Length: 106
Length: 123
Image: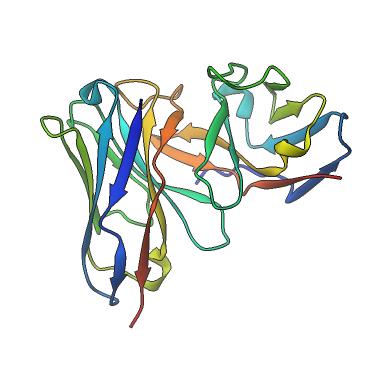
């Protein structure tokens, strides 16, 4: 079965750029979505189809996908961005989520 | 306001059954595929199943295939998940999630999520 691999944790200082990666075999051939989940809350879609932002998502969130790696980039990271982030793709009519990355803003 | 509201969770013994419901409002329900996604306590997200807008196409994760059945009643704007032969490893918060489009495709994503309903499988 297809697997998506994320680093368990990423740390960033306020105002700096955070990059969260998601890797998988020929991932660039698939569309990637990213979700933000804060403690006790439901996930929120922040990026879909590799680079698109849903309405209401700040411009500091951006995405890219090429080769075997997709990246979620948060520019000018704020304390409110501290959360778990999950990448997601479709493979063989099933949905696959990455294991999640805990973003710490300190 | 676009909203999804799950219900039906609870405590069930191993081998038992449970049916979850997800009431949708604020959008044309039949125009979108819908999924169930679960999250075990302290763990990551795990996709469970998807159904197309018409209900004519369904897919399941290997972990639930043959035990769970997804369905929908577009006249009632409601999504269901019938869970049979429940196991301890099915313990999780179950979310329903709206797809961007009418069919589950490689471009799909989940743009609206419910608040979740907890299912606990234990004796």
